[in-house]
Structures are given as structure tokens and as C-alpha cells.
Image (cartoon, rainbow, N blue to C red):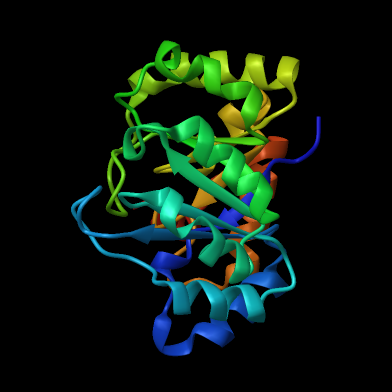
Amino acid sequence: MATPLLLPSMMCADFGHLAEEVAALEAAGVDGFHLDVMDGAFVPNYALGLGDVAFICEAASVPCDVHLMIERAADHVQLFADAGAQIIYVHSESDPHIARTLLKIRESGAEPGLAINPGTSLDTVRTLLPLVDHVLVMTVNPGFAGQPYLDFVDEKLERLIALGAEMGFSVVVDGACSPERIATLGSRGADGFVLGTSALFGKDRPYDELVRGLRAAWLGTWHPTPSVSEWLQ
């Protein structure tokens, strides 16, 4: 089993030094960047805009995905593909013609991804899975960093991991991805993890040390020390 992908959520980065953040995270060995776009309507918050996405995609040498938490996502797919997004995630609730939107993402040159909210049942989106290359499983309610992990999502996540192995899509976990959960869910077959304030940002520790710790967590060689325990606070 391959080591799961580690994908920093750039809404948590220091935007006063964004180029330096991108460079430092890449030097630490992250596998890509996760870019959240919020419009204040589909979710009750605002996050990255098109210019932010274009800047990060231009600065990065690793893949960038965009998570569109916006209404009328179909109207904006080509803009974000042109800005450099290699994967575009959309929510079924944001679009009455979501199948058409997923096809539009592929036509734009990006890889289509489906983001699934905690309260969205697998049965609701099961028929869409043949259209996607990636599934983003939200383990917190979308819109804000720093929320607690919602354990009831685990059953749906495990079913999606099994379907992904069968159908050929990747499964990425987004929300409260601590070292322990990366170890547990990575061993169960999750392909990647979005890293926010639970594991990477705001820890006052070098990114390379944190990323090494997350790799070690998955390999089962990570053990908390007094200093690293602060990372989990």
C-alpha cells in the first residue's frame, strides 16, 4: 500500500508570505496543495479567490486541487481549470445538474472530483461515482478550519474506500486529520489527507518536522513526545 498523499489546506497558510509558504511546504515533502474556494452562500464563510488559486498554482511544482464550495459551480469550472487546478471537486448539493458539471470538469482539462458532506448519504451520490477520478470525504462540516472530527462518517468512508478500489477513484479525507487518524485511516486504504490546523498549520514547528511525523504516524513508528504532544492541542 502506498503512503497516503499529504495535501496542505492553503486557506490555513500565512497569506502575508504565501510564496514562502508554498516553497517551505514543498521542501517539507508535501504531495500537493488543496485550495478551498468559498462564496459565503453555499457555506457560511469566504476563502480563496481565483487570484489566490492562480498564484498558488503558478508557484507550485506539485499538483493543486480546488474544492469549490460555491453555488453555480458549473459556471466557474473553466476559470479554475485555466488558473491551473488539476483536480476540481464539486458538491452534488450545489448543482441540480451535477452529472453535467462533472463532465464539464473533464472537458476543461481537469480531473473531476466529488466532495461529499458529512450529512450526505452514499446512496444519494452512488450513481455519480463512475464519473469521477477522486472523492473528497468531508469529516467536518465544510466552511471552517479547526472543527472536531465527526466519527459517524467513518462507515461511509470505509464503504467509499472499498468502492474506490473497485471503481478506480481515489479517496481523500478532509477534516481534523490528526496523526492518529492518518495512521488509522491510511491503514484502511484512504489515499490522501487534507492537512489543516489539526496536523500542520499554527504549530510553531518546522513544516519538514511535522510532515516527517505524519509519514511516521502512518508507518506506525510515530510516538508522541512532550514537545510533539503540543502539536495535537
